[in-house]
Length: 233
Image (cartoon, rainbow, N blue to C red; front, side, top):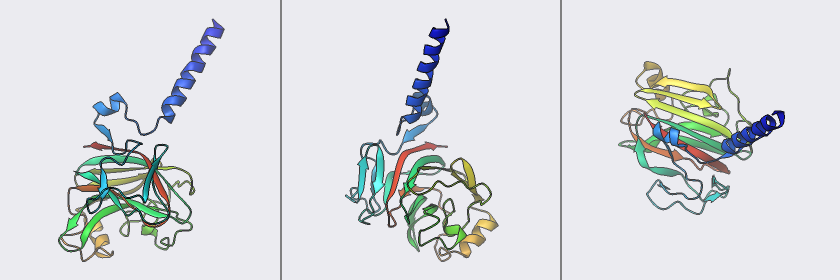
């Protein structure tokens, strides 16, 4: 009996390990709750350049990972679909000195061009753009700095996870399960922060749009993504 129980526990542990390692996957129960993959682990299906062209060779897919190569020839890529209320999760990995970001509500502004709110991704220690707190990982780029109290950032070359929840006017940024930023897009605090940022002259007011695409930024240096999932709220 003891031997049978031991074998059973080994099988349970093995099954749990296999499930935990399964990448770019949405279970049946998660699908029922509305989750879908934005990256299938094999192709760039569902993504284009910001101009609508095919994803260039500067981006590559290997072993279930989507990578913007360090040569700088990738450019930003966006989803073909627009989203309004959503929960987005993904894993990312930067190389030393790399700079990237995940933009949402990415759309064309009448004055200011194609823009979106940005969850900043950075090598906080060595990237050039690390001089301002609101330019560090987890920040709403150039607008709101991330929490210093709960920030847990893995080093370059290691994976980090992020989550963005946007519902109505409310937005939250999470880094490795810790909340970094929380704001309301119609609040005075947010509007004042925008007015003090590089987006102050954008119209309509930066961050006021309620729908747009998801963008993965190539901003110099290698950055990789996997397990990109979204749920409409």
